[in-house]
Image (cartoon, rainbow, N blue to C red):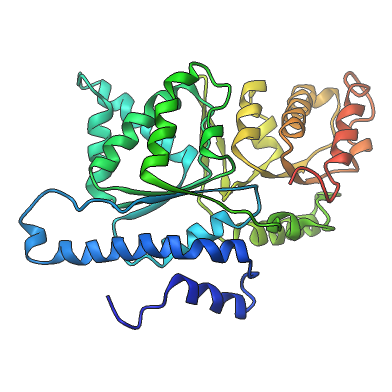
Length: 363
C-alpha cells in the first residue's frame, strides 16, 4: 500500500468540505472502525499476492467485521459505500441483503439437485472462493427459510476468511423478532456479536427525512413535469446510482421491484398493481424498503377494479409499515376514484395518501 493513501476519515472530511456530504459526529465516530477493517483487508491482500501467499491454499483469517445499526436515514449506507469504494481489494462485493439471500436460496436449490448431503457447504465454498469482503445493505430477516440458513452459512464464510460488514435498522437482538421457531435463530445472533463489532449510529439527524422535509412527494397530474421532479428525488435519495432490480421471494414466487438502492425502491403503478399480486406480496415489499417511489397512478373505476383493489391493499401495507411514499398520479387522492364499485371504500385510502404526504410521515 502507498504511504500517501488517504484514510477514510480524511476522505470523509474532504467530501464534507466540498459539500458532497453533511458532516455528522456520529458518522465520524464510526470511521476508525471501518478504517481498521480496510487496512487489515488490504494488508492481507498484499501478502496473498506475495511468493508465500501462492504456496498455501488456506485463506488469511478475516478481520473482525462490523454490524452498523440505527434508524433509517442516518447515513449507514453512505458510510458503507464510502468504505467499500475505497477498500483497495478486488475480491469484494456490496449487495442488498434481500438480494443476497435470494441468490443463496437459488444456489441451494441447485445444489440439492446434485444429491449432496449438505447443500449449504458448496454454496459457502463458491461464495468464499471469490470474495474476501461482503458488504450487506439493510440486513433484516423476516423469512423462516432465511432464518434457518444464515447461521451455518455465515459460520462457513467466516471460517473461509470472508469479512462481513453490514447495516441494519435493528440491533442484533431485534433480528427476526417474534419469528417462527426463533429460539433456533438465537445462536446466529451470538455468532454476529462474536465475529462482528456491533456499533449503533446514534445520529440525531435523519438525512433521508432531511432531504424530503417540506418537499413535495405527491405529484399530479402524472405528466412530464412530475416525471422530472421524481427523477430528481430518486437521484437525491439514491446518490444517482442503482443496485438494479430487487427480487423478493414470497411463498415460493418472485416479486420484483425494478429499481432499488439503499432501502429506496422505484416502480410503476402497473408493475405493482397490474399483475396478480396479493397481501403477502405487498407486505414483503413494505418490509423490504423504507421509501417507495410509485409512478403513474391512473384514475380508478370499474374498468380497472382489480388494479384498484390491489392499489388499496398496497397502500394499506405501506401505511402500516410506515413506508415513505413518493408518487405521481392522474389526480388528487380524493379524485382518483370518484364513482363505481369500491369508490366509497377508497375514501380511507385517499385519507391515508394525504396523511402519508406529511413531512413527519414514516421516516
